Length: 393
Image 1 (cartoon, rainbow, N blue to C red):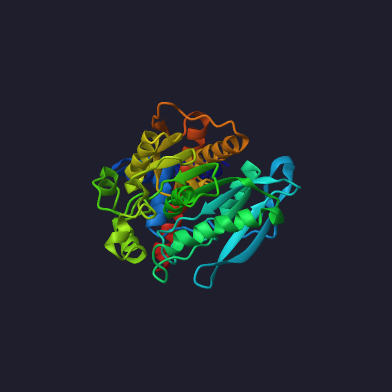
Image 2: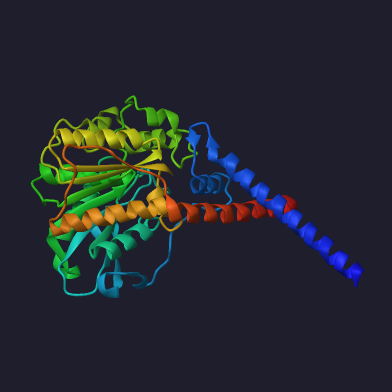
């Protein structure tokens, strides 16, 4: 009996030792991933970036959903309705639209959503951004229309923006068919789509309609010119999910002629006149090469008397709102976007006056504990997967 007790004790001690070593290994790994040349990352951000940049997980957040979306529900818990269709645009072409809308008579506010993806084929489409579109429809009780504008290299500027404007005109003309309110239309987009969203505000003003209610720009590209911007220099490696190489490739293929770079419909930061544009929410990320130009654009809008709310989220990278299902800061960003749109649609929007950039800190309190715990669990999985791959190769 004593021998058995001694044997069990030794097994317990050995197990405890192995667990302790494993915990230390995980902790050290996270610490190493957190420390970058550009600054110290929050644990969750560091783990996710390590996983993506080392091809341990695919950067694919697409969630397939049926026609009636049980996972996304509007006010009152009603499932959203989804419709996929094509509409005609210039040049005898057609582009895809995806519409999510609440059930009921409405009319519901309309949000035109423009996806990111560097204006290039293979970098983004209405499928890769489906989770944001679906969630915005549910959170704002609005009709959200994702626009599949044509992209480079097959179609160069201004095809994408002309397609996007044609989609707005289509939405106005056909609002009754999907219970939309043609008098309450906002535009929203991320990255390249953020560029297109604010260009839509310019086009709607310049072409005398339709009048837009608001614009939401998430980490937008606002200029194709070689402007001196610190964030472009510091975070251009690609580790933070957007590289200088991709930015130059986008410029070369989307705007192949230099005169295009200065057009306000390509580089809204260079627009001579920004008066008369709808209220704007601009979200930027600390570790993002596009951070400074997004914030510079917010300042210029404010200088022209446009009501602007701008928030920089610390500790996160380009595209973080798309990762709202696994990043708390992404959840915060999506909540801010949804709240802004609801207020704009209800006519209760209040923006700071005078303009001031708001800074949102990384998750604190319980959210921080949860983020760190999840980061630890994900890191354990990644290390285990790396070990399995090492021994099976």
